[in-house]
Image 1 (cartoon, rainbow, N blue to C red):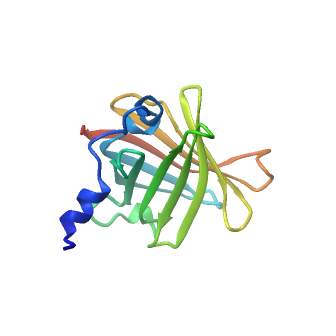
Image 2: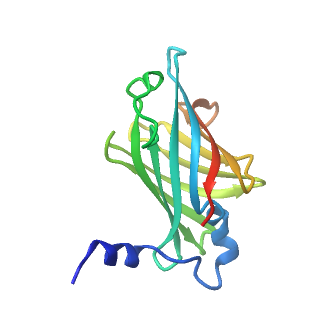
Amino acid sequence: MFTPSSFAEALHSAGPIDGLAEKLNLYGRFVGAWTFDASRRLEDGTVLTGRGEVHFGWVLEGRAIQDVWILPARDAGPSPSLGKWTFYGTTLRVYDPGADAWHIFWSDPRNQYFSRQLGRAEGDTIVQVGATGTGAWVRWSFSRITKESFRWLGERSHDNGATWRTDVEFLARRATTP
Protein backbone atom coordinates (compact mmCIF):
# COMPACT_ATOMS: atom_id res chain seq x y z
CA MET A 1 0.00 0.00 0.00
CA PHE A 2 1.27 3.46 -0.90
CA THR A 3 1.81 5.97 1.88
CA PRO A 4 3.62 9.31 1.79
CA SER A 5 6.38 7.80 3.92
CA SER A 6 6.81 4.88 1.48
CA PHE A 7 7.32 7.39 -1.35
CA ALA A 8 9.99 9.22 0.66
CA GLU A 9 11.67 5.90 1.52
CA ALA A 10 11.67 4.85 -2.14
CA LEU A 11 13.10 8.19 -3.28
CA HIS A 12 15.68 9.04 -0.60
CA SER A 13 18.98 7.26 -0.03
CA ALA A 14 21.42 7.29 2.88
CA GLY A 15 24.40 8.06 0.66
CA PRO A 16 26.07 7.41 -2.69
CA ILE A 17 26.01 4.02 -4.36
CA ASP A 18 29.14 1.92 -3.79
CA GLY A 19 31.87 2.34 -6.39
CA LEU A 20 30.88 5.84 -7.51
CA ALA A 21 31.16 7.82 -4.25
CA GLU A 22 34.16 9.87 -5.37
CA LYS A 23 32.47 11.00 -8.61
CA LEU A 24 29.09 11.49 -6.93
CA ASN A 25 30.54 13.71 -4.22
CA LEU A 26 30.98 16.51 -6.76
CA TYR A 27 27.41 17.44 -5.74
CA GLY A 28 27.14 15.08 -2.76
CA ARG A 29 29.16 17.49 -0.64
CA PHE A 30 26.15 19.81 -0.66
CA VAL A 31 23.81 17.30 1.05
CA GLY A 32 22.08 19.06 3.91
CA ALA A 33 20.22 22.34 4.45
CA TRP A 34 21.47 25.79 3.45
CA THR A 35 20.24 29.37 3.56
CA PHE A 36 21.21 31.91 0.94
CA ASP A 37 21.20 35.62 0.21
CA ALA A 38 19.94 36.16 -3.33
CA SER A 39 20.31 39.01 -5.77
CA ARG A 40 18.89 39.33 -9.27
CA ARG A 41 19.85 42.02 -11.76
CA LEU A 42 17.08 42.97 -14.19
CA GLU A 43 17.72 44.26 -17.71
CA ASP A 44 17.00 47.85 -16.57
CA GLY A 45 19.65 47.62 -13.82
CA THR A 46 17.18 47.13 -10.95
CA VAL A 47 18.50 44.70 -8.33
CA LEU A 48 16.08 42.48 -6.40
CA THR A 49 17.28 40.87 -3.17
CA GLY A 50 16.00 38.32 -0.68
CA ARG A 51 16.78 35.36 1.56
CA GLY A 52 16.05 31.79 0.53
CA GLU A 53 16.72 28.19 1.44
CA VAL A 54 17.97 25.11 -0.39
CA HIS A 55 18.00 21.45 0.68
CA PHE A 56 20.13 18.75 -1.01
CA GLY A 57 19.72 14.99 -0.58
CA TRP A 58 20.73 11.62 -2.02
CA VAL A 59 18.02 9.96 -4.13
CA LEU A 60 17.41 7.03 -6.50
CA GLU A 61 19.53 4.39 -4.73
CA GLY A 62 22.33 6.92 -4.21
CA ARG A 63 22.78 7.44 -7.96
CA ALA A 64 21.58 11.06 -7.99
CA ILE A 65 21.32 14.27 -5.97
CA GLN A 66 18.05 16.15 -5.71
CA ASP A 67 17.55 19.59 -4.24
CA VAL A 68 14.73 21.99 -3.48
CA TRP A 69 15.33 25.76 -3.87
CA ILE A 70 12.86 28.14 -2.19
CA LEU A 71 12.70 31.93 -2.44
CA PRO A 72 11.70 33.57 -0.20
CA ALA A 73 12.66 31.19 2.61
CA ARG A 74 9.62 29.68 4.26
CA ASP A 75 10.36 31.49 7.54
CA ALA A 76 11.22 34.83 5.89
CA GLY A 77 7.74 36.21 5.28
CA PRO A 78 6.99 38.70 2.50
CA SER A 79 9.91 40.68 1.13
CA PRO A 80 9.24 43.89 -0.81
CA SER A 81 12.82 43.83 -2.13
CA LEU A 82 12.02 40.62 -4.07
CA GLY A 83 9.30 42.19 -6.17
CA LYS A 84 7.58 39.33 -8.00
CA TRP A 85 10.76 37.20 -7.99
CA THR A 86 9.87 33.99 -6.19
CA PHE A 87 10.45 30.33 -6.93
CA TYR A 88 9.90 26.90 -5.45
CA GLY A 89 11.69 24.37 -7.62
CA THR A 90 13.77 21.24 -7.69
CA THR A 91 16.87 20.02 -9.48
CA LEU A 92 17.63 16.40 -10.24
CA ARG A 93 21.34 15.79 -10.90
CA VAL A 94 22.20 12.38 -12.34
CA TYR A 95 25.79 11.28 -12.90
CA ASP A 96 26.58 9.66 -16.28
CA PRO A 97 29.79 7.56 -15.99
CA GLY A 98 30.04 7.18 -19.78
CA ALA A 99 30.19 10.96 -20.29
CA ASP A 100 31.87 11.65 -16.93
CA ALA A 101 29.31 14.44 -16.56
CA TRP A 102 26.04 15.20 -14.82
CA HIS A 103 22.64 15.53 -16.47
CA ILE A 104 20.88 18.44 -14.75
CA PHE A 105 17.09 18.85 -14.80
CA TRP A 106 15.63 22.00 -13.17
CA SER A 107 11.88 22.35 -12.71
CA ASP A 108 10.07 25.38 -11.24
CA PRO A 109 6.34 24.72 -11.63
CA ARG A 110 5.40 28.01 -9.92
CA ASN A 111 7.02 30.03 -12.73
CA GLN A 112 6.82 27.37 -15.45
CA TYR A 113 10.61 27.54 -15.95
CA PHE A 114 12.42 24.36 -16.90
CA SER A 115 16.05 23.83 -17.83
CA ARG A 116 18.22 20.94 -18.92
CA GLN A 117 21.99 21.26 -18.61
CA LEU A 118 25.21 19.28 -18.56
CA GLY A 119 27.45 19.76 -15.53
CA ARG A 120 31.16 19.13 -14.92
CA ALA A 121 33.94 20.21 -12.62
CA GLU A 122 36.21 22.89 -14.07
CA GLY A 123 39.01 23.22 -11.56
CA ASP A 124 37.45 24.23 -8.23
CA THR A 125 34.19 25.30 -9.89
CA ILE A 126 31.20 23.24 -11.00
CA VAL A 127 29.83 24.54 -14.31
CA GLN A 128 26.45 23.61 -15.80
CA VAL A 129 25.61 24.72 -19.36
CA GLY A 130 22.36 24.45 -21.30
CA ALA A 131 19.91 26.43 -23.43
CA THR A 132 16.57 28.10 -22.78
CA GLY A 133 13.46 27.56 -24.87
CA THR A 134 14.20 30.90 -26.58
CA GLY A 135 17.67 29.81 -27.71
CA ALA A 136 19.67 31.74 -25.14
CA TRP A 137 22.45 29.83 -23.41
CA VAL A 138 22.48 29.52 -19.64
CA ARG A 139 25.48 28.83 -17.43
CA TRP A 140 24.97 28.02 -13.79
CA SER A 141 28.01 27.54 -11.58
CA PHE A 142 29.00 26.70 -8.04
CA SER A 143 32.23 28.37 -6.89
CA ARG A 144 34.00 29.42 -3.69
CA ILE A 145 32.94 26.04 -2.33
CA THR A 146 33.82 25.21 1.29
CA LYS A 147 32.19 22.85 3.79
CA GLU A 148 30.17 25.78 5.11
CA SER A 149 29.47 28.01 2.09
CA PHE A 150 29.28 28.35 -1.69
CA ARG A 151 28.48 30.90 -4.37
CA TRP A 152 25.93 30.00 -7.03
CA LEU A 153 25.90 32.16 -10.15
CA GLY A 154 23.32 32.17 -12.96
CA GLU A 155 24.39 33.70 -16.26
CA ARG A 156 22.84 34.07 -19.71
CA SER A 157 24.29 34.51 -23.21
CA HIS A 158 22.46 35.66 -26.32
CA ASP A 159 25.52 35.29 -28.59
CA ASN A 160 26.30 31.55 -28.32
CA GLY A 161 28.55 31.97 -25.29
CA ALA A 162 30.79 34.77 -26.59
CA THR A 163 29.64 37.03 -23.73
CA TRP A 164 27.76 36.30 -20.52
CA ARG A 165 25.48 38.50 -18.40
CA THR A 166 25.00 37.73 -14.71
CA ASP A 167 21.31 37.29 -13.90
CA VAL A 168 21.42 35.96 -10.34
CA GLU A 169 23.84 35.32 -7.51
CA PHE A 170 23.22 33.27 -4.38
CA LEU A 171 25.63 33.29 -1.44
CA ALA A 172 24.84 30.19 0.59
CA ARG A 173 25.69 29.18 4.17
CA ARG A 174 25.22 25.72 5.60
CA ALA A 175 22.32 25.51 8.06
CA THR A 176 22.66 21.81 8.95
CA THR A 177 24.80 18.85 7.99
CA PRO A 178 23.31 15.47 7.12
